[in-house]
Amino acid sequence: MLARYIAQDDPEQTPKANHLIDSLTVENPGFICLAAVVELVRVLQVCYDASKEESVAVLDRLLRIPALVIENAEIVVQALREYRGTTAHFADCVINRSGIYAGCAYIATFDRKASNLGGMQLIQ
Image (cartoon, rainbow, N blue to C red; front, side):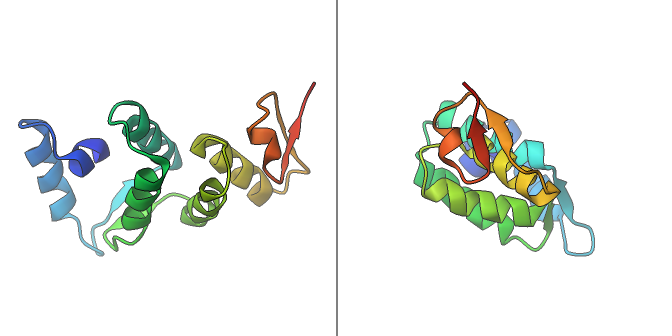
């Protein structure tokens, strides 16, 4: 639904997504879970060929909509900051920031790109 709202590309689903988002208020907000945020970035990049910069801009805009509550918004903000300066995937940045928030000593990974994130440790 979020991808349709952002892309405005489907004649049947886009008006429904617009109606839903436009009906939200601060008193009656929409909720976006952390998994949906990660999936949105993946869909934008894989299905819509969005660049990293475009994906970051979309999330920046979503974070500023008062009628949307984003689960663990602070983790998303930190992951976005990290994502801007790395070659790791956004999902890895969210995993890393979630682990740091949870107080983990480190996050184990086999992903070399992800292992460059502070908080991730490459398992060999």
